[in-house]
Length: 472
Image (cartoon, rainbow, N blue to C red; front, side):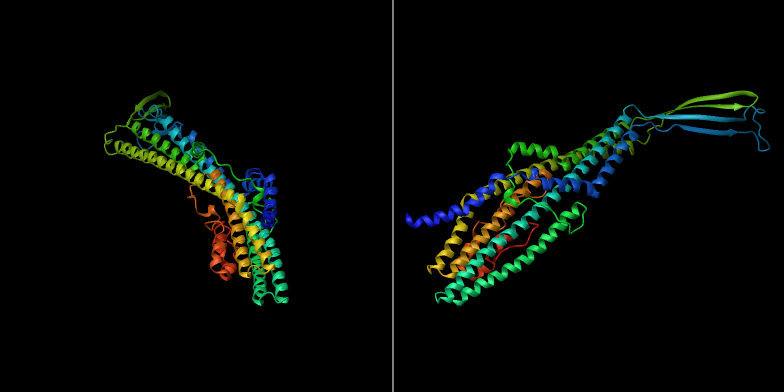
């Protein structure tokens, strides 16, 4: 049992930072730094101003659609002969003043207003999509920036670890107990770390520029973020039925499709009512100078003698469009439900993976690296074992960061009600498949693994934050 005590001490020491970080974690939605950025982006995005203007324009169409046609004023002169004005002299010569008003068949005005209101609802859905998209863009950019800064922090920890490895290799080489290749390899890895630092610093500047573009600020303006992904609470896994209901209730695409279906239905009802003619009422007076004035009233109704080629065809066309709109709304509802289920499964997988990382994998990986380095000092293992253990640590740390970022992105997609595919087992797994795969790869080829064996585990952790730390 005494031989197990140093390993237990290493496990407890490695677990301490994770336990401390878990005490004061805040949800992404409550991050004050992100809240300020969201407020700024909602004010700065021109897409939102454009969508707001379109909503106002569509709402202005509703009263227009339900209004009566403008009355018609007609002025005229009827005269006998071309020689002179005969008004007041000839009975058939007169001035005319007429007024006419068309009254649509009952129900037509209401249907036109309802169709226009449905069009306005579609514009509101477009505004909701623009707002949700703007918020999601900023949240994703923020998570990407935090992820890059976490990778830089990981790089600093690895630099300290490789400095110890180089010091150990140097001491063993100078004492004759180690090979020169061990020292050279440790120095090579430290140089590679400096190369990775240059890449990560460039990516951080790019991520800052993205955030500043979204909020309308200069590209190089500093951006404050939370301490790291471990400072963010994991997203809660919603109940399946509640997630489906929420997605259907908030999806702008589904709301737009349903508004389009409602508009097509109202237009179909209007087309059927167009078979019934409108009525035009007219009245006029004809002053005749010294003679008694004349007057007239009238009613005119169009005769639908060509309704078989016009009104009936229009009704059939509108009915087909209404059927298309209803089918499109059903299709959108199916996609919205599917994406909500995909996000839930992917989030469940990500949360389970994070639990594996925190529940032992990270602790074991860090302890393995420490143990390998300690045993190398005493000559119990070759330097290849140190490379193998460090490669596994890199892969596991990168996988953890990638999975934590992906869990936050899945929550962002849920708030956005995104229609993008979100299948579990992709980026949610940290981008490298099975945790610790980097260490297994390096067991078969230590030199290749230490130089780039963790690349697969690191590269997929963020779809938009592609710099890997493989080979650290």
